[in-house]
Image (cartoon, rainbow, N blue to C red; front, side):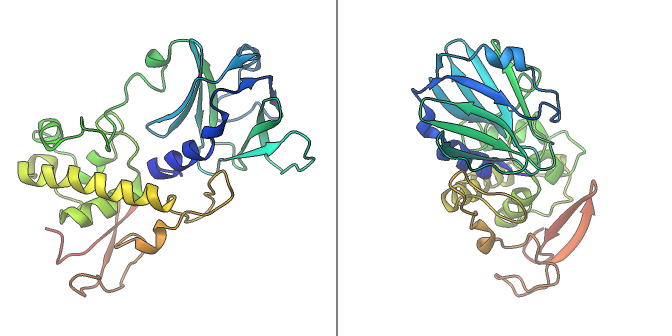
Length: 269
């Protein structure tokens, strides 16, 4: 599933639709994770796109006092294509059509979603989200205050979208390695100086991944069709039994909440 860097890459890739007028929205397949409300989406006709941005793992297309909230799901991708092109891909489910081009949402597994709202902050997908990890609000003080009484593991806390958004499994592994914190440590056992380091590592890893265009492990492509190349910089994820780049110890693989967790038993304490 695309994580924050992949979603941010997609947002930047479609930024050219800003200030363009939506002529129509064509829904080829409404049965996504939630059924697309075609009547509500039709209300965007003749509205100008005022902004395109990311909130957590959602892509938000804002026009006047309304917004389209798009989630890529596990296999969703976006591309911009000229209207006079006849190119069509299987699983092109929704087309947002402008004067000369269209934004196409493709999703083979249909776990993605598209919603319309005129009350963005109170939408059920948005209202309970935590802070953005690359923002100033995600500080060591903030993280420590949220986890210092928690019995949950630090990895699950980093992936808790009500606490901090956008960090999925891949980047949680990488952040914990950079911060030298073992994934199974309980939140209440994390020292304040370690919480500070975790927030610093989060910003470092996520910004590096955004700069590289995300991480391509299976299906992710940016809107220009390019793959993300942060995969070549992964220090622990997917490297079971390989030597750690820092200490040369063997990287370990365990399961946490049905997800793969990779860590170095020597570097991470």
